[in-house]
Length: 561
Image (cartoon, rainbow, N blue to C red; front, side, top):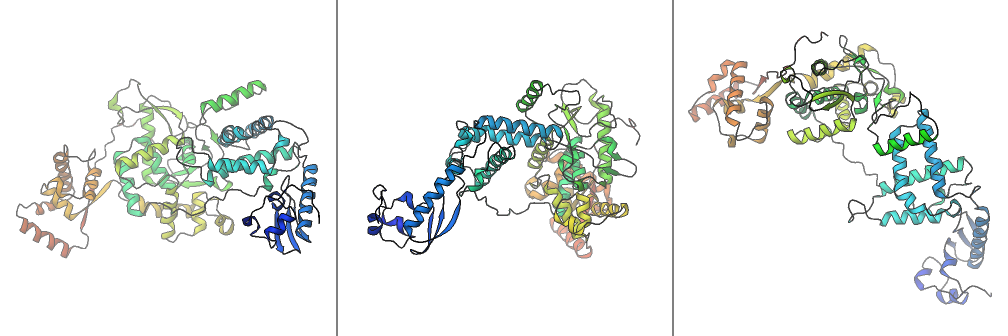
């Protein structure tokens, strides 16, 4: 059977998946290009044939290998004719401009969050336009997209040139590209989405990371550290997170009118977005000016209100007494800063320095409230720094939700009630959701209070540590855990310079709480050892609670609650 193809360029390895021999293939002048898109199912009888251009149509062909090659070439020809995929031959950059305008229109209608628009635009303006920007839409097919994926896999990271992009990162870029192409299909600018025919799509690893959350004692330690060391804003914010297990954006969206200080009820109605970059916001403003689309109701703030995540997120909950007290002190702090706090003002706002006020009136040295909505990312940063400084377990804000769920589930609370409290959107809500009345929500509040918020203002000391303090033991004789306990008692972290002073304060607190413990002040080591052994033998509880003195010096009676 004669052929007009060019000379065969096959080698033996090219025919591993075919029954034909190299000599016979060379005689028939079969090339590497001929074999692309062909898979042998039954030798010389049945083949899978796929077009290698355009929409890559595939079918089963019955016949010999030469017949399969001929059929593949026909599919390629038809694909090229049909795959005049562009009804209006515009450039890729013109298509990008149309898509970005579409995203802004959706944001104007409230269908999209401004940060989602920013995320899409950021990805488009980076690698996507760098690669496709020189092409017309008629030139973009699945082959070109596959080349883009290969390019992304070998491209070094910009900030770490010795590393490559992960499959997950590449996948997020491709989702944006796919959304853009789907939009062009919906507007009939192209006929089909070429991404659907791509064969080398990334496969992100789906290994589940171990969830890191607080155990009960770890959560209590975190709360005690917050009570002792955190500034009033962070302390209040974190007590609300721990009290309700809410999302950080939900907590940032709370206004003073959303809190009922009598019933302790909190009503979630808004969330706050993370701040939009200035450069991107200016792009939106320029677009609106160009379209004469400005009006007084436009929100051009970098931090803005948005709707809650799901319908179930609109809910009522009940705060702990500790959180309510923190809110009252935070309110007084704002008033002491000279702010006329209105009911519709956001609770969590920014700080700034430099206002000339009487420092005696507030207990936050250089912190002055500015009453402007705060970026949720700023509070996340404050929490990260606080954990690092005071040795708190590295649990991020969202994982505290898992802590709350774990505490409630351990105490036998039904999953549907937990889901209701957290404003959850998981399938459990759809399968088990029933109405949870006010009494049930208050029971959940009591369960959390009894587990997490009891004795937050107290420090548990082992009798061994108490004895060391009462007898002025050297700092070297204390363990790391012992020093952490002293940190909670003192006004600042313990070090070699302030150790003697802190031991004196701790000793006074111990004897103030229980004067009978002076029985353990003994210079005789053997006598002291016998006293300890006797105490432990006849007492089941071998720890004592030391109540800390509160260190909040804000003007009294500024506001009555």
